[in-house]
Amino acid sequence: MSINNLATLFGWYQTWGLGVIKVVTTGGAGATVYATSTAGSVDAAVVAGDIVYGATFASAIGTPSAGLATVALENPYCGDTDNA
Image (cartoon, rainbow, N blue to C red; front, side):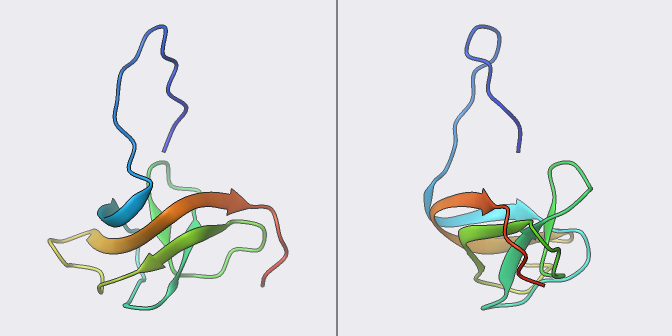
């Protein structure tokens, strides 16, 4: 994800429902979503301070296609909490 500078960019953001997201290596239905150091990707591997609250994996990695997974979103946001 990135900041949308409305002066120069236009885009849509999904904040609720089932969405498709790029996953680095791990993820499975019911797993917690974490931010990663790979731009634009998430993972289920625990990263202290990088949990994405309001997002849960709804499928395994590879569904709907390679490198992607379905996530259930409920107004997600990143929290800076030591959850390791």
